[in-house]
Image 1 (tube, protein in one colour):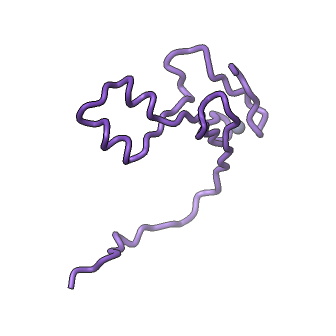
Image 2 (cartoon, rainbow, N blue to C red):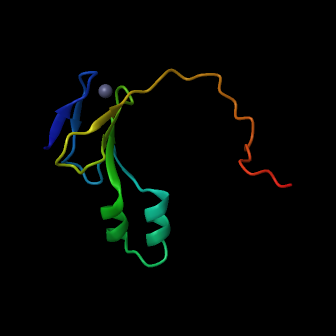
Length: 94
Ligand SMILES: [Zn+2]
């Protein structure tokens, strides 16, 4: 797969320019913790999940099961007036 079309009509290219400006790599905290001390950049690359962010619509196409499987689509929602209220402690000190 070298190209696919986003739901907005934008063509998403998975190859070509290196580095690909719309390609992202996401790594779980577990894998990051495992690799941060002894892993190589190649190890981190292979433990990461690739996703593409549509430059026109901000839709995210996440390849959870690898680049040769169908991606999951995540749609952006309009910005809200969300304001963090601080850290909520699950286990307050007693
Ligand atoms: Zn799009």
